[in-house]
Length: 171
Image (cartoon, rainbow, N blue to C red; front, top):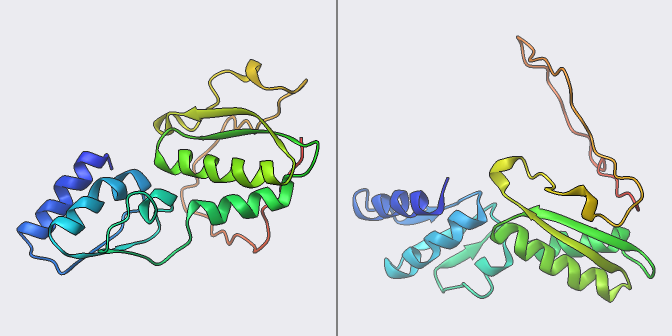
């Protein structure tokens, strides 16, 4: 959803449907746009799963209740896994509050651990979170997954993602 659409929908819920609570959104951008309505209409807004720090940080109001983690918690865990003295890190994030808050928190944590942030790249999230120019990366070789000749299954195949399957790689 676009933030302005989220505001329209939340306003309808508050005015036409007279809801007692707002819950959501999954987008930090949408959530930040709707936060002022919770205060204006004096209705509790339960935030889940949007994670931008600013939701319960700089943009907080007394009607906001977060039930999940925030960007800083993710960022500190990621930094603890890969950052140390002498490590150079490039960050890539979507170009809105979720990405900005996440990179800001990650940079703080990684730099405290001695890592150097050599590049911050923010991509339009609508454009598949792409890196616009790989020549700016400070590496001799850049690797990425390329999916070619993908085929859609007629019947979806069940998949269960195992716990602990995320692997951090030092470049």
